[in-house]
Amino acid sequence: MRWDATSNSASGCKRQRKGRLSLVVSLGEVRVLATRNDWGDAKLGALSKALDNLVVVDINHQSVLDAYVELDLVSQSHPDGARNMGKNDLWIAACAKAAGATLLTTDNDFSHLIPQHVDGEVIDAKAAADDEA
Image (cartoon, one colour):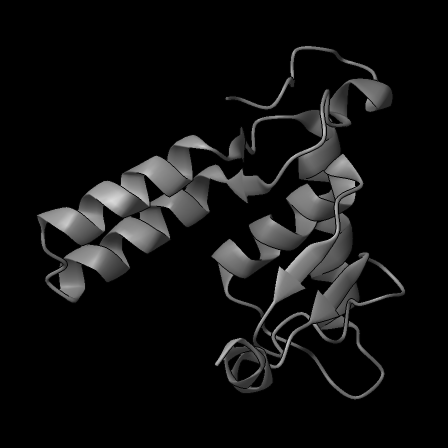
């Protein structure tokens, strides 16, 4: 399913239905990871099925572009010194902000933006894995 980005109004950037969002560039990142790690057919099939259940957000929307500029400027002027984010991370944060979505992450690359600029949560991946065990 694709995110509805056809409206020129800010409200058109909001999700049309609830669901898990993924940025289109994240799909590329996860496919690189899978290829780099020589995932077999079974794992690639499971990945494809999981990705098919996501609402995919395109970056070509004015509110996403505006959020990208805002968040990059915030990152570069951080009181503790410039935070040079990876560009894909910056796109992810911008899409979350524009869509009014909660950004979930397992690293601290977004911590200077959460919660003042982007709704989000840093998840301790080790603790989450331990909880499932």
